[in-house]
Length: 393
Image 1 (cartoon, rainbow, N blue to C red):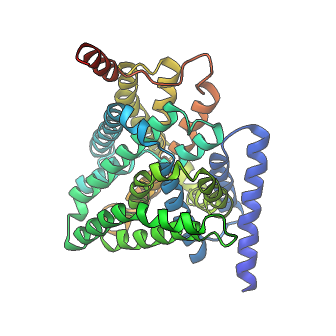
Image 2: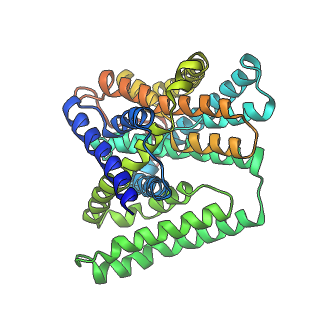
């Protein structure tokens, strides 16, 4: 027990240090937590215990749920095509480019190359959402369109992993059926609980949300999927409901950014080995270049088509270039099923984590949207619909 408290104290010290540095330098605390984790993991060998794994995993689940719940239904309708096109291109091109790079440049076998393509095609909803919250962009049209595109991107990753490796089993069908049922009953159930018990000191409505997320995480893993996927879907399904209960979302946000996400982001940094970075730096940088270049080739032209503006377009592309949750999950899947070696796993994880840091730092420092440039996105498709409606009222 004494040892557990010491480990907890060290992790909380790292979390506090990251918060203070973030405030001082004006960089997202999620990125600073990853960097602090890298230093702590390699210098003091910060221990990852079972309870740290749980807090980090559940933190990713709740954070993903919040990202979905923050997207207003109106925004999804208005920017459906932007999110779909950008999300699909942000997945497809990096998947093909990174898979080809692994196969032809580094001569990995076909299965290892597929894992590399999947792991490096991702966009980190967790990182993007954390950045959006801190920068105040989560409530803007641009921010919500980016979050929706992140979901489409990662859904492509999950489907690719299922089609190429895990297959579709009876257990996965059970998970899908349960998820559909929960999607339909979650809002009516929450409405009753919230109306009757909202505002009580014991916060039963927040416990209800955590219960649903924990249950769905279990069912997802039982079905061979990932715990964060149903969290995002439920969040989007309940987004309209939570427009009436913004205060509850603020409370959940305070809880997760204090008690859960520091463990998630610091753990991501702890997984990076200085030795791996030094000995395999060339491969890591080449993979990072493959991923970022492919994202730019796919996303940036799409942002121009949808008239994001130059600054907003580059900002969007850089955030879509981030990776973390599904990237590390896909890499770990490849390692545990012997599709990739330990060295290949180290290269992929280091690349994924660097992709969470480098593009976000560049986006925040050099391409952050400014008031002079309109944040609300103008869609050519939306303009066409308006013209049709005007001609045919």
